[in-house]
Image (cartoon, rainbow, N blue to C red; front, side, top):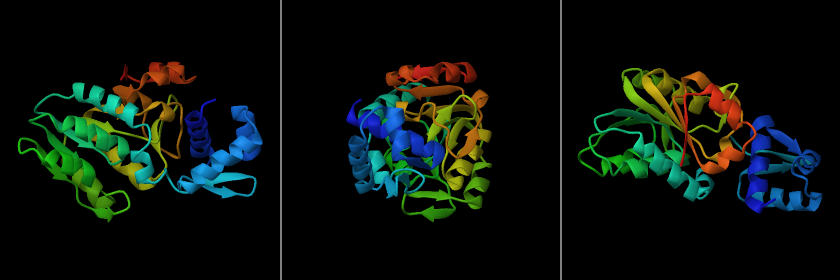
Length: 251
């Protein structure tokens, strides 16, 4: 099993349970304890996890944003290009915050005639570079760690809009619960955007397929299109997800 694949599997186990023992990781991945110890040390050094006696726990909801920006960049760019092909000029689009959304914004920023409604400073900045796109940055409490707004004021602003599309990126996508995230604030923003959009597009690379995080915010039948990379075809859960949602587009 490749180095990055082991790290992805360890992240998946932690997102599902919040804590995982070395023994369970060894059993799940079929590699030596020494290999797992090295993997956990590396993930801890990067700030993604916190080592505890006998295993590891999540250091937070997701890896730090700078780590996420540098992870699976090629897959995210391919997904962003496919998402861009689903967007039409003149549409109003909700976009939430996160590393995948930043890459999607870069791909979409070359388009014109769009109205973008977002709680992400990064997403807003990329669209604002063109005069022929309108950008609405949602107000609310500011999270400088990620560069986003959130809270009741943000949600209240979202409900003022009726968007053509909500383009969102979760921690995980699973057939039973749909899209989910670890943080309550993040999930509430995504849920409000889903509720006020005609169609929902979920952008998620293979590491998020089959993952059920703490808070579900978009039921599978509400997902119109899941955009992911071809490696997701190997996931055991992909067939069930395909039956539960509208459609899957591979980037």
